[in-house]
Length: 299
Length: 293
Figure 1 (cartoon, each protein chain N blue to C red):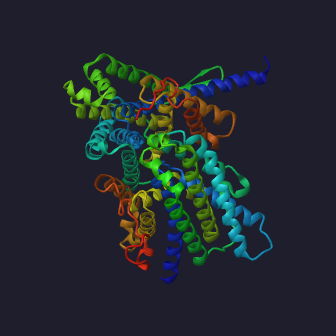
Figure 2 (cartoon, chains in turn blue, purple):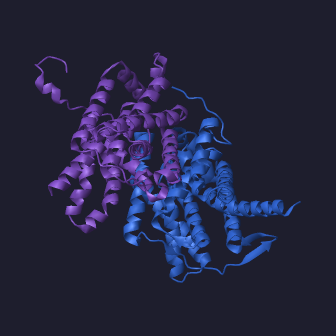
């Protein structure tokens, strides 16, 4: 093998690692999107903002001297609670009005958090405090930092936890029942309002965790940080098949890797474009997503 | 003060064209599009490129008309390219796909060096003024109002009311959806051309997703499906930032927060907007009683 091809493979490996890290963050956000969509058929535009809120709670906790292992659950809890409040005040009254009014409301909520954040916290990006010392490991020419490892491991643990929650517990069963058929679930004695609130809580706390991880990875947080990752996580959810939990993970990882390959081998300015291109292609070729099944539309 | 008033009137005119054309897609046809700023950008940039690089040796006004025409054609072609694949999708999926296309258009502009790229496109001659803007406002309103009242318009409205029912009544829904989408995009392109020749400077960041949301807010505030409503909504949202500025610096900073709260409360309390689906037709006053307007 010539030296050029060797370098090509080292580069490829590096971009794959970076892509997987980035992708697992998208996957964490996408999980919340997919769960909320699965249960009330709402594209929760404000989901990216829960991620931003998580990042900021983490920022203030660590600035206040809290160790990372404490700040992390606090951030998850915090963004979960914000999501539950938003659901109660804004989404619950609009739920019966149809999908488009709900979508517009979600859009409004997202803008509300972005701009309120900008005014209260300031539009400039804040340097995320170094909670842990960064270490680098080298495998040949491939470089992996301990933060990347933490991100991958945390994502993995959270996903296993979510899988367990949905498939092995009573509340998971209730969530599934509510998403299959709202009315029937209610007739079976399930308090669907509580289940929907809980879904929002779990989804948003996943996003909050992603916020802290991103703060550590890029070492900055800012009020507008939720916009683009939020949209991309939605794309990841659609790519994997919206409403399907493993789909969100597959979609997120695919998107992260695709993006990093574009940055590496083409031009970094097209980074945001590729995500939307993937979205449009998947919507045209297989609108139900990679894992989704086609459903006939009924009158 | 007078100059500011004139400036606001002209901006209102451009926003009226944008809102009325988005209303054709979102309100009258019921296809939820979130990429209107993209079509606006296509029109603005193509018309500006025409007057900067390929100006004809005729009076500037003629060049402006040709520019508006080019803007219309370019944006409708963009609308056709985007509409044909996307209009197979429904509801929220369509919203996201159009949002994606709007962003892609912006990213392409950002990466095209001959029209300024990230530096912005400057040196566009200032041709459009009050007269030209309102001439095109009138043209837009008349054309869209007439489309709405004719055969095609009835077909388009039936798609909004119930797409499957319209389909089974023998209406070729795909054709009419594409038609509404292409015409709406085209008028947004015209608005872009007028805008480019008024501000003389274009920057890709002026055509973000945020701008699409503001146009959407104009339509929703006025009432989805009502042309009168879109006009009123466009005027209100053009004047609102200025009024807020008069009320003090701090309130002006909260502009976007106020917009978002407005959007949410509108949806919660009065989802129909100001006018609902009603129209206010000034011609009615000139007709005799009993005659149908």
